[in-house]
Image (cartoon, rainbow, N blue to C red; front, side, top):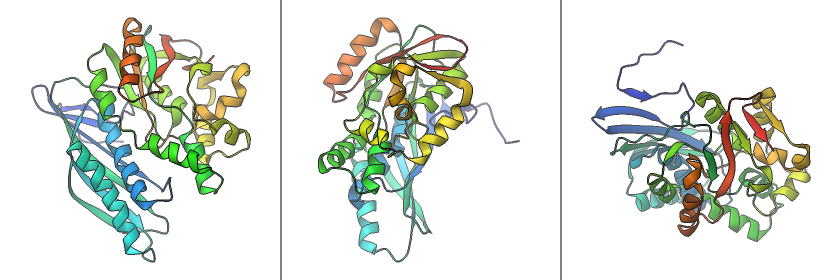
Length: 314
């Protein structure tokens, strides 16, 4: 595909990074991204909030500070206008919490409700956090438990318990903003947020474009309570199977943890940050993340020299 570029484009789509980065002055970069999701909870207001947190996460994964946003809302005209208002209000409230200004948006008629935001931010310190700069020897830190897609699938199937709904909603509303600020104080080599391609899919992008492999410590990867039981019942989103198919021969999985395999491919709405950091500082980083509200943060793997597979679940 032939596209126009200039020297100020510092991060495009070639490495499947979380956002585009464009230089506008020395050490000042514009950061742009867009994300759209379908309803993951029944409450319109919380759906709008989650959509905003999810979209802003791309900027945080790059080290950006949100400035402006535009909404994209697709809906069936038979749906009550009050529902659309609640979705928008939820998004506006989350944007307001971050100081991000809503400047407009667009609507489309669709049979299924979909909502998302195009977000623009700024990197003021010249430090871009990319997904393709992981170094062998780095520890991999993750800030949230897996299983969001499985629990929200159970919600759609009216199978989830009230406490599960409450817990997964709180998890999706946990912004990566503070984590993004924290990791700037550590020797972080690479970062990405885990969303639609699941842990395995986004880790593949990180390892492949960095030219190394990632060994995951499967038993140490945190999982939402109840998610494994639903997975064993077959309550798994279709996207997880697509993600596994996408990885193909690029990963290997230990037979000792085979019951957890689909959780590694589970699409995460508003997932956590996967952070490559110098091993010497990884424990300190995890402790600070925990103190700042990311209670499930832990070391889940390590980067190694390129091997037979990009991703290994030990």
